[in-house]
Image 1 (tube, rainbow over the protein chains, first blue to last red):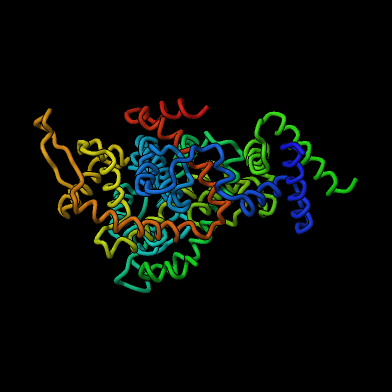
Image 2: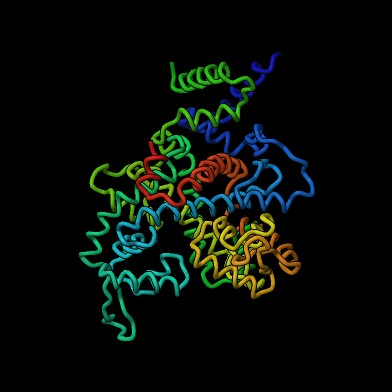
Amino acid sequence: MDRGEQQLIDLVNAWAKYSEATPDADVAGFCLHYLTETAQPAVLNQHSPVASPDGLYDEKWVESLTGTANRSLTEIRPSSRLAALVGRLSKYGYFYSKKAMFPLNFKSIEEPVYLIVLAQMGTPKKSELIYEMMVEFASGIDVVNRLVGMGYIEEFPDENDRRSKRLRITEAGLTILQECFPVMNRVADVAYSSLTEGEKALLIQILDKLDRYHAEHYKLSKNAGFDEVYDRMVT
Amino acid sequence: MDRGEQQLIDLVNAWAKYSEATPDADVAGFCLHYLTETAQPAVLNQHSPVASPDGLYDEKWVESLTGTANRSLTEIRPSSRLAALVGRLSKYGYFYSKKAMFPLNFKSIEEPVYLIVLAQMGTPKKSELIYEMMVEFASGIDVVNRLVGMGYIEEFPDENDRRSKRLRITEAGLTILQECFPVMNRVADVAYSSLTEGEKALLIQILDKLDRYHAEHYKLSKNAGFDEVYDRMVT
């Protein structure tokens, strides 16, 4: 039997197993299932160079963090590699967003995102908005104060709790948001338009699952120490 | 012909086309190719609810940014959805890293990453290290000064340029790094271990491609305005 024949037999056998277990089996669903459930990293990385597997651990970390990796993905733990990649990509997004937001007098995309989240929340307490933004309180307060100063957010006393203040978006805030949306889309295009539509769809599918997982655990983890978080989330 | 038969014929035809063009065709490579080059988002999102396609644009943005989306991915532009997801995931990572780094007296994972990058660069100028970290100069200086204060980095005069200072990691810096590596891996596990190995491999494959693309454009974009960046990177 030649190699291509064997591969075709493997393919059809995998399909048979999948379609037996899946009522509305289709080709795209099969491919996704095969890759995410069956395939191992080594299979996917077949085109990457493979360096000596021992002793280079820290060095690989260094490379992956600084973008100079020779891309031999097998030596570094996949979760650590992912953490480094997501961190770097979010920095690129921030870098481009700063440039894009400059004409609108925003420091970065973070500020219009505060407005969007506030618009959705309605009239939250300051602390509630900052909690939702997942930032440290001190830096959250800085952004809120800046947006108040720009006239996009207003503070008002809480009727039920005189010591507390609530926030709401102003008319000017809603207006500037309408200007921001197309700019934010342009930043997203710079960051992600080099991917194919299929790649984007795959990424969204996996990252969305991850986002839901973390949204659920974030509230539980808010006041917990790291060991408690680790024990709950890593099995 | 029944539905399953038609799907199997589609699968084998797609395989035939792929294996003809690909010398070492295998099943995993085929699946990845099919999803990233052939499949459309609508196909992959078949299980997502589909809301009314018009008028909800901004609201979908809001939802996607605050994690309360009903996950109907078809209405929001994929690039924008990705930007929001990557931003949120990096915030979760930062949140967990702060907790994990607390016993080591670091504010977040950012500080040991400075040490790692510095260890790799050798004896860079301050500005070179901060450039590599992709942060604003003022916040980069704060981190460097803090690490100098902790004894993990030392400054020394540049032999060729007396006005300038260079940095290098200290013995204490190298020692603390050895303590940091396992902690950083634990943070990565909290962030990504809920994915399957196949999902991680897929993510790495796509994000790595994106990272290389941005590493290449970052240098060109450093001093450019956003419109210039957009015109060069989005076609």
